Length: 505
Image 1 (cartoon, rainbow, N blue to C red):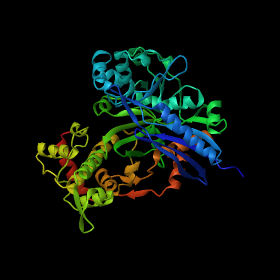
Image 2 (image 1 turned 180 degrees about the vertical axis):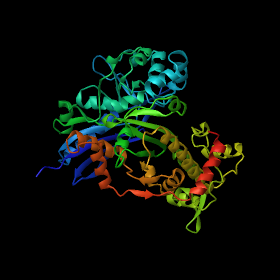
Image 3 (image 1 turned 135 degrees about the horizontal axis):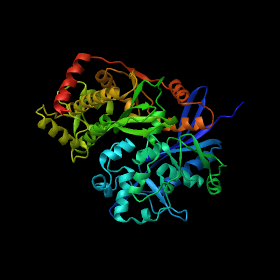
Image 4 (image 1 turned 180 degrees about the horizontal axis):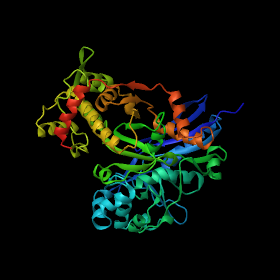
């Protein structure tokens, strides 16, 4: 009888990380969290850094725990947030901790670059990537502009998951999905663009060999084997960008689907064979990121539960109370379902906002910003937590409809279902609103998409699954997806007309 295969996933977010072991048996998967730890942003000298050594230490710690349990792991895979990178010197040493994308040095770098180096339209025509000031191209430009010593002396530039894989194996690669977030990659050639690199004073040789998800990077170095008590375990390049791994875990039955990765931020997109780069995609600021098996993730960023989360923190800090369970209770003691349930009791579509308005990017008070928007657009101003929560949920669902319709215009096939993955897949009210608003069947789950996708890509590399569709079938077999069918069409159609009038988009 074949022994059970254990896969070790490292899933790193911008605030926390974890290590997980996963197995696949009888066409189903199982996950178990091994360790969880903070990912601390370091502020020093007016700059923000990631502690790459602390992250490496936590990976070693997780591997030690697996060895202590006597588990024989088949492989290791690492996924992280996008755009950030590590500089390696010609002596093979890391040249200081990597800058974090929140570093203020990038605040004016994008506008400066697009004005004085290469135009916005030219950059988009090459990369098909939406414009964010912290994209790698603008971080590198800002470092070049300031004469950053690590930049000036870098022999190699490795994106964060590739840097951690290098620390484990000694081998330098440039994994395709994480490289696609840099705004330096041409999705048609699937290579870093020489002209864009030259505009930064860089050459292709500064980056590792381009590899696709599922490629074996190498095995653990003798040093890491000694530290952990493990043998020569292979390290696999999974979809190094966490969204790439999450979308790989969408349990779709065929290509005719859209996905909504729902959390603090929402990402709505489709999976296509080729990048979609056009005047319209440029105008609407859609992005083309690398997917698995040569696919492109064509998507748009949408403000998600950020609005709700910020309001809830304000209510808690101000001592706001809510009438639930027949009494007045502090918001700090009210569960999410209770707060959201109270919102279902108030008048729908009374106040509508555009969740992606610049007003909501980083306001001193999110409650105040929502109220200001409603005043400015001559709408009733929501006052209570229930009214504000209802305004947020109605507005998000209507924005999802707008982007879903745009997505259908771009898609080379009819979108038959919308898969909601991530933490937001547990939000039954917003899920139902999304089905009502878009008119699409919504399937919610999995919540842990990133870790599942990471492990599935390792399983593919090990020959345990053959392709993305078998991966997705296993995921569907392992989960009870929750289905939401559209309701109240006339009311949502009228609300969408109101949304378009108010937002004027």
